[in-house]
Image 1 (cartoon, rainbow, N blue to C red):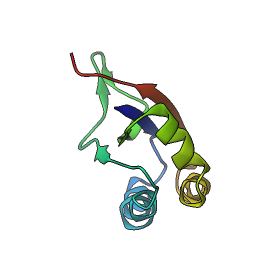
Image 2 (image 1 turned 90 degrees about the vertical axis):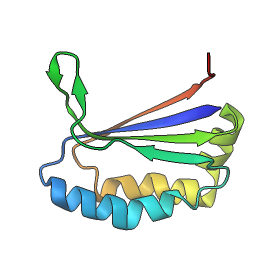
Image 3 (image 1 turned 90 degrees about the horizontal axis):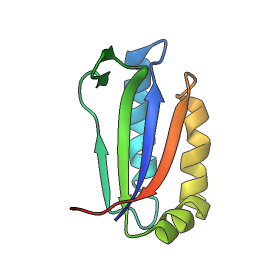
Length: 102
């Protein structure tokens, strides 16, 4: 399975971020073709040394790297990417990778 990981930095207003993220962005992202799974972190995101710079981490699963590329290029993927500017002003780091269970 291939993964797209979105690591959202701590916003100035966490309540406004969460309201927009869950009320608008998640429903939009769930329309992206090829999306197989969608997981989000709960509670504080920490490092072994303590707090991190991240407020929320989302992990989206797809069948393959090619499926992620197709999803990102779709009208729904483009709309979802454009929506980031509406609520992720603190920044978001996006990672794409293949994965396997071992």
